[in-house]
Length: 506
Ligand code: AMP
Image 1 (cartoon, rainbow, N blue to C red):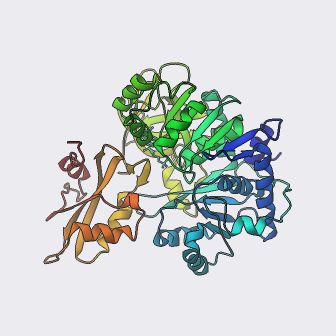
Image 2: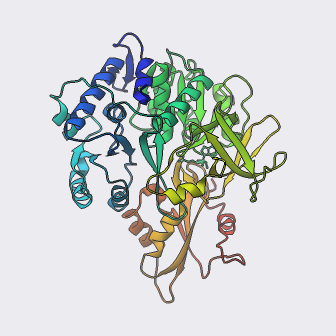
């Protein structure tokens, strides 16, 4: 039997090949048949170059319909798809390419020179470009390849995608997700969210992350229906297209931005059946305001790169504000204390999960992988959670000190390492504070070396050349010493408290 997830999608494609799968705001459309032929062409083209199953295909491009077809092509050919955030700098890409050793790299046309240098340094055999309008060398070179391809047989545990997540050590880790992991989660969500063949998903998320790529795209590919494909989140376009949509998925920032618009009304949402939120905590205030304005109750769910979705508020039944709902079918979860004993009642503890959705481990990090799993096979999520008597889970914090800014993860250690490398700096501590728009904003406390003349503006500007913008601190505070506990650990909670009101709306 072939466990290639593409064959699962295809087995459920609408009988009519000209049914529209994807439509852009300009009204261009691609049918399910187009998705089949475009992905077949790319799979055949790359295979003919000598790319073989298990090879990595690194993709750092703007969102376009063609990237989705490239993703499907990789699944079909058994290549490991490796999407990368377009905000990553050359510096960061060096790490990913060195670690993943891809056979193919596809990048933005405007970054052709940077890519050539990177490919040269890391021995990438094939380098192509793919623009937001579908232009670039990849489609040009594959244009004449026949659109026929025999899908490669995959076993359940064969890796389909590597997604990099950072670590508290500062070194990003490649989470390996298998064909069976992706299929299990897509099937669970399909059922849980009552997917209908005439659903229209307004897709405004990036597709280098699980939320936009797996949760949103897999729902449509598996369930039928149509994607309204926005290149990025744009409130004007969302408000214009919501009346033509039935499902929307967003990070909390999307919802607060919609609420800030007087033209976001119940009338605009008249055809909607489901709004889903995740990737960061949704404030109760946003949940309530959204309901009052639109008449819809946002369904909040919880997951992570390593596991896909673990919990969801119910489609039918109460959706409780401030909770991420119940364990999805097929997912076991437990909340334990420091000694790995289950906590009692609704006490807070470490959340652990197990299920077919849970990843196969970190790419080339067997020790790190082993550390993150318990002896009985549960994955330590690193999240702190509690569970009420009805089984609803609340995520109350992150024991890994992760900062989530605008739905994107920032690991303090990575930013601290960059800051500490700058001249005149002794040490630093990076932490998140509440921000009305981004959820959290990155800030840094910096200890200058004796006599060093530093200024906030210069440090921020220097970091902008080295780190993706969302990781660069919005504020730098100069201190004489960092607050530390008796064990010598920096007390970030004190820094967070001291600066909690930096971004308060006056
Ligand atoms: P990522 O791997 O980028 O998807 O980030 C996963 C982390 O985001 C989780 O470990 C949680 O800390 C956080 N997260 C995701 N969804 C939620 C949610 N609904 N509420 C609170 N935190 C969330």
